[in-house]
Image 1 (cartoon, rainbow, N blue to C red):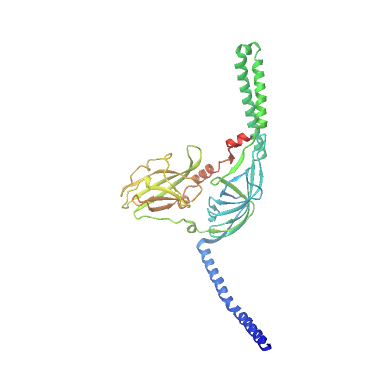
Image 2 (tube, one colour; image 1 turned 30 degrees about the horizontal axis):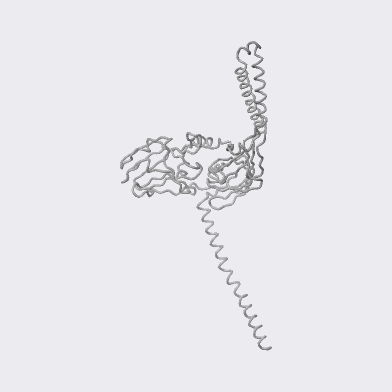
Length: 390
């Protein structure tokens, strides 16, 4: 019995010793793996960055669009959300934050709409960015739909004055219709004045009861985020930010201008391209063989509300044409490729990056596009059910 126990103890001791001796052998490949990853990271840095470093300053503003709906009636303080940078943020020597960078944020406060026409408010805080190459950049950024107190008060007073004047005009017409022109003349206008006063009182009552608009920020809506910290950032190489393209032999497409425009219904959802096409290939094309394809592979054909000359024109081998063509899209801030399809098998033959072309567009056009995209006031139009509940 004693011998059996001793054998088991010795066997256990040998097993522990064997395992202990193997531990250093396992550690060596892990160390080699880390060294290999460091070399890859250094190579990646060399491919992406120029080696220069610049700082984002406090006054800098980043244009973003949210990834989900933010509603003043639904969302609460502390709710997380993500947004996407829609324009390259550049410094003196190049791009610091590329388009497509993801921002993490939280709702810092919400205020529901109130009487006297006071609108709802949403305030957003941003704490870090995730660039397309995987870097996490800490920031302190803020955005709010709240108006300047003076501007807000002036807006409410102007609206309420409008309600009161409208009520006064309506009251005057009612008195004229009910009592007649003769009564107005006989009373030296007092009937009209009384009617206007009564109408003004009704209008003022409507103004006092009027509720402000709720706030709705939806994907595609562009917001401006102010940066409150000084952040050091490496400068990207121009070649690192180019999107992949597909070319067909003999088909040369040059995009010289890109404009963001409203459709006939006032929605900023139209991209108008000024293009030059030289077709020295063996294919015939028309505008109906073109489309804009976004990074989700959604396909958008030419819009009938834009310039339609190219849309219905045959572009035969040997032809050279220039003109404008428009596309109505679901979200103007996504990445797009101008794509030409083979008529027979419907497969893409050529894909030209709108992002790549946009880098060469004039500063004047870019400023115009920024202005038209950011003019939204985020008002949520009430639906029928909301009106009935009130």
